[in-house]
Length: 468
Image 1 (tube, helix red, strand yellow):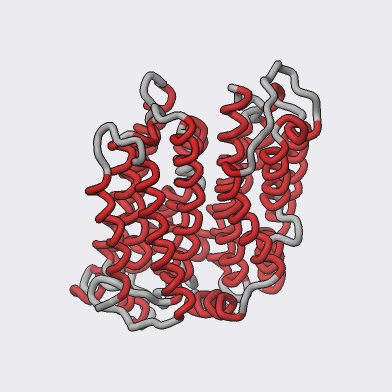
Image 2 (tube, one colour):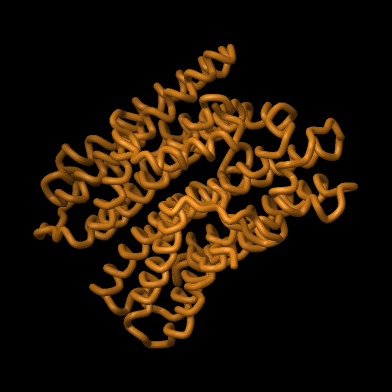
């Protein structure tokens, strides 16, 4: 039996969830831990039994299962701690428990799916589950954001479905398996090129690339902190796996898809920089930074070569960065009852752990060493210069500099400045921040030292992406 079947194991947790049960959030933590155990075993074991009709545990699946499940554990432990302190919170509801388990199983199925239709359905399931968790009762803004997210998800996945149909046109059922598509010969067939273009636009919508990014800032802002972290750190990378599998098809990067990724990536970075300059909302600032990250990743994917390894380092690092930042913002919002940056200050004194994680997360967000995001950006810039893409190189560097200044100007006064509102001070316990601490350790290791087995896994995925 393909070990990928074990990603379905958390479905057992559904029977432990029920109305009025105060430990529903803890059940979700247990389900996430099961998935982490499966993902770690697959990644450390390094054994690929090969792909069957439905599933694959190739290097791409093993790497991203590990990243997604560890990030998810951090998010649900945060949610469980909130529910533990206040049993009436939505995290303890049976509905949230069911949706959380379905999201977890769906995103893991997306990563290990070898069949195109299964991967598409699994990602759609995560979108439906997430949409219902975005909406919060009696908050009209969150309900509107939920509907906008759902509409954009349907449009994006609809374009992706058309793209897969174009790839399969005339190729028979063999074109419905990713391993067969990756082994197929390159072709200049116009249907194939159209399929690649539709897939980049459709999956790019789910990633938050321009021009289809309008859902992202509102959704990330209005959703509860744990749900925002889940979307940014977990679902984003599940969608990225599908895009990587598309780019593993011969001829994908060298045709219209590669050029589209460069254009959309640079446009997304430019949109992000302008929006960061204008916003005064800390949650929206990190949301706009997420659009910037999607743009950087798109440019790296469009380049290939040495940038492939850089994209992986950057994507994995940013999964942990966004989880750390959005969960920290959840603590800030809970304490100050605001997301307005000018109304928050003195975090390092008032909420020392939160202030510390926000500061370190911001440094990582901006690509400072020793974090993996720094090395990832450096490899992508190096490949841009080596491939003589000087226009993109110049735009990339200019946008990064603008983002650096705009983000630092807004965030660092929150950490070191004086608060403009009266906040209730209390000793901040360390326990709620342990998930962020674990993610931070992983983030630092990505920049300083990757164990040989994990480095080999990164290299294997990069080679499959056309890298060196």
